[in-house]
Length: 113
Length: 117
Image (cartoon, rainbow over all chains, first blue to last red):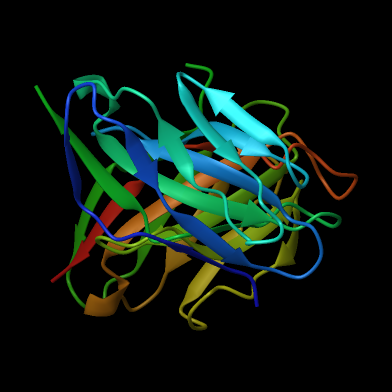
């Protein structure tokens, strides 16, 4: 079945550091890929997405590129802020049919001043 | 508000009690999902509705779990004879798309945290 594997946390970075959170996936066909973020006390919300190979999703300074050859969708940000502290979930959904989303286990990011 | 609303936010139940969790999706959203999120884990799919039809219930862990969406809007997840392993956050999400396809973007509520003693 479909699955998403992401790096374990927590990840602790100083403000303005470079962030990478690794994500790889297993799925048949050509899934759409997502990063969701959960800020403390809030519900999950979509951060960015990519729907086909080589697409780059971006939002709020975060980027991720859909790499079919390595089945990866790593999340990056050049300079993190304290306000980026949250739990980040990599996810996928298959093309066609209804849009059941499969999530990874989440990576907690803590940014310290 | 205009977002997905879930109630109650927190529920403590004694083992063996029945619980009901409510979800008010965004108005007009066709698809509604229930997920279960254990502590430190990602959301795990439970069930899916397109309007009032329950098209996928493959993630429900046992026959003690039951979900309905009788009028294609509000949904209720019911857990009978709760067990300690049912303790988790139950997330509801909605999206505008149905089988014809959508962006795949889900809009989540803040969840209902269930603790079974």
